[in-house]
Image (cartoon, rainbow, N blue to C red):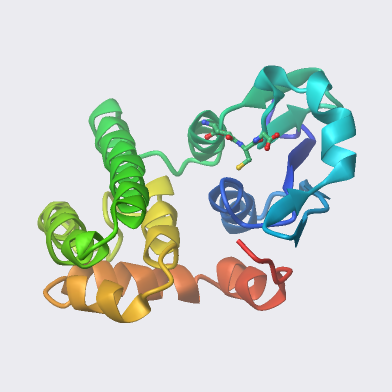
Length: 214
Ligand SMILES: N[C@@H](CCC(=O)N[C@@H](CS)C(=O)NCC(=O)O)C(=O)O
């Protein structure tokens, strides 16, 4: 398989679990087919007839899925897709230690999203506690690990998967005021956020990507 492969990334018409991969493609300047199953909400239920019809043909019956070379290879699981693309596009660190650090931080993002979802269902002041404790602590750790070589990226001297994951984590939450408060002491992370946003290919994508409800 060479990097001249063609790619089709299949997901719903939303950012969700596909947006980091879309941004990896954009940052790498690699063309791909951004296939989106239509999805709407009616009476609190997701309506997506085209997906319901096609679902059984997909690995694990879930999306995102990345098809390579006209479906010759199919990769499921958003994190596997992200790591595959990051490796292929040279955005997964410059050695196995950097790759593992990027990987671990990405796993922590999954844990933190899980904690947020749990807090939302717990009620009371659980969400407030989440922002003040869990998210603030995680950001503080990411901050401490960041920018060792002054490149302005989280690790190494170039944009990596984690920079993009961090950007999307920051925008994952509706309550941006609480996110900014959690980031208050994190100058390096805020700079990474801005650096990602200003990356020309990403800046262009952010200005033209379709609006979506998630
Ligand atoms: N761990 C998987 C989860 C994939 C997943 O649950 N995808 C949802 C959409 S966000 C899905 O396809 N659900 C099947 C359905 O709604 O029928 C990943 O990260 O890719």
